[in-house]
Length: 274
Length: 122
Image 1 (cartoon, rainbow over the protein chains, first blue to last red):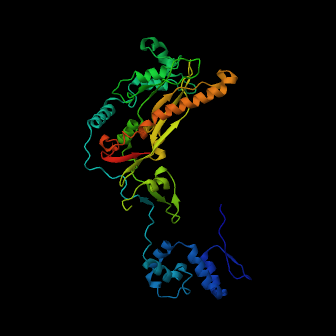
Image 2: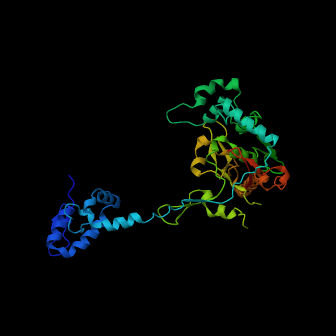
Image 3: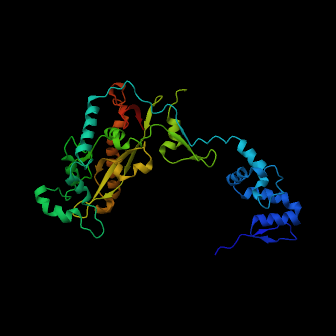
């Protein structure tokens, strides 16, 4: 069982303990009136203001009394004047938690979509409607990526199914290191992963013993960036302008959360004034 | 150059050696990933948002323990040159002057909210 909080008499020679504030104030009023004002001020700091305001409003017949005279029954009425002053003041305006760079991320009103972009958008909607495994082309391709992930106590997809279907599907092997590249290159052109191109470094070799030039597959990063920018799943998450984030509790304390909240982006952005 | 009201699109390129299979042959790849900085990192790192794209699966360079000791430094230098050349070609569209001409429509990008913005890649 928790112990009761004891309130002590402020007089050093007395130091008597009380379990209630009202008893303590009654004791001070009768035996140590010189500490009465100090005790009332301490009571103001301990109690919360809204609670005292409700009590004072519900007992209007005690407002005109001296606060020290009625402390026994209504101990909180000692600070009515202070409460009234605090209620009459206007609350401070809320602190701005976020500041967005003005003018950044403006729309292009005279934009006329290129045929390529219209086609790309149409393909995107078609994929999302018809293919549940988007951005993978097919269900087999989705399983192909997962087949190398082996969880504890479970057989992989390769061990369960693809091992028997290997011959029929002509599943590419990893023996010569070209399996992944061959699979990626064999994808349909109009699918999500169909923009791969083979590049060759003619003048470079892995070492002197290898005569064949270095080849690698890659795709255009600008097209990938465009795809990420127009993906409908990112509609609410995309950020077009830098921001200054502040802590609401600590005045003018900056919060650096993401890239768009850093100073670099804000300083790089060009204002209309300059 | 970034103009008034333009949108900045920071491109984030990352690469890591990834273990692919436990079967036979080559078991690892070295993919180069790309994403944009216009999302919060919390959203970007969620796999279901598909915010990270594979740009190029690079070949694994020849490891030094497979060759003679006297040629290890030479092979290491060769690996660096190959990787540098491949990354230079992958990032070449960002610096191409032909792409940045106003007639190409390179910077006019359709965004997810259906509007078009003048974006500048960094």
